[in-house]
Amino acid sequence: MRYGGASTTMPAARPLLRSQEPPWEALSLVAGFLDARSLAAASCVSTSWHAAFAADHLWARLCRSHYPSAIGLLPLHSDSNGNAADRRACPHRGLYVLFHAASSRGRSLPAPRLALADVAFCIDLFAASGETTLSLAVAASDAGVTKAPGGVFQFVVDVSDRNAAAGPGEHWSVRWTAVRTGLAPAAAIVMMDAKVPASRAGAFGSGERGEAWATETMPAPGCGGGRLEAEVVVGVRGEERLVETVRLGVLLDCRYVSLDEGLRYLQHFLL
Image 1 (cartoon, rainbow, N blue to C red):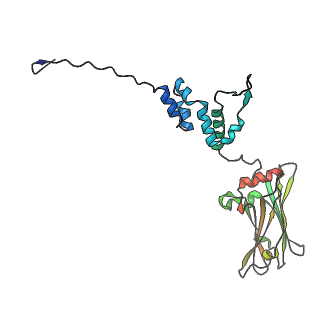
Image 2: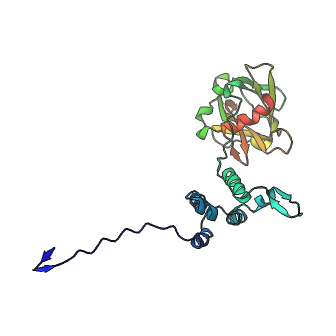
Image 3: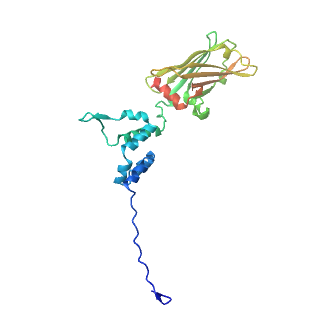
């Protein structure tokens, strides 16, 4: 090629250098700084990377850091020389994966096998004299659970049309029984059989309406102490204390349990 009367020669193009894998030593140095996700991804790149990033001592470090108790589950056996040897090439990786999956899993419990439509509630309210003030049976699905915020195990039964008067007694007694309906054989559990304390049954203040309530520890399913409490709240109005509503609920540590939690409890006794 001529340029300004002079002859020039274009330099030959240099061949592109093919990228080279980092040396073995570099892989081993980097591996110690990677987390579990990065180690797992890097070990899938090639055979040499797998050898560097799937080394058992790397996963042993992660196990000791995140799940130290898992180390006690290593399946060790003695070889012919009496030395402890691992049955697998990388047992710590398997342990890490096992414990990580367990901790990452959701803690939701299976849906209860007992449906709300299978349960009825029977309520008996007795005056201080022992006379029956109010008795009713209502299907749980018709007891106003949909009105409860968040779908908790709390039910409201409107009994204002019954003209049931609680009267001025010093205390009341309440019995709440849950019954399985529609399935044979029949089954029932007494959720509460308690007296409403005089301090709650006596004075309602100066208002037209008031409430009296009782709580009682519920029987524990299987072994162990009971932590659940049944609650019955009776709403009254006027001088005669006409019963307007009966509210039923189950509490755990002063909060109402969810509908599914309550049904899972009942199925221990009703199924």
